[in-house]
Length: 124
Image 1: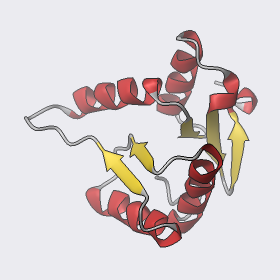
Image 2: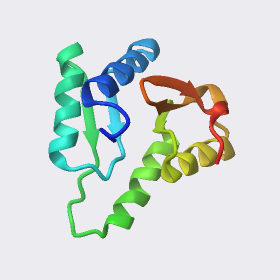
Image 3: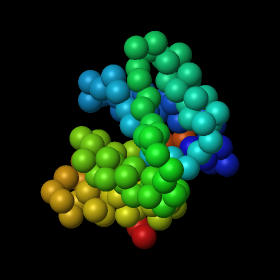
Image 4: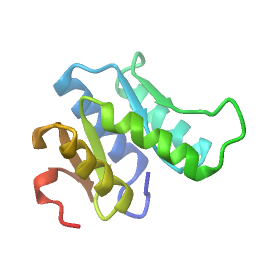
């Protein structure tokens, strides 16, 4: 979630569009954003559909941020669709790793300002 590039409502609209296109009601978020930022995105998604769920991994024991990021990455690797952010090394790594384990390029997207782009346009 990076308000520097686009607002929470814009992100929610784009993510909701992906969810509708692929028939999803649940989405996982891998983010180092604050709880309030994630809650704002959740509320914005639920404005579109109150039954949409935005799930975030919450450790049950003390884990360092890098450990949580590694678990988030594993979950993102296994998802049917991945939407990352442009210019994010973390998102780029997930896109590359997803391709390496057999996901096709049409299952990965990136947010660039107010657009959703296929990963084939991403350069690292």
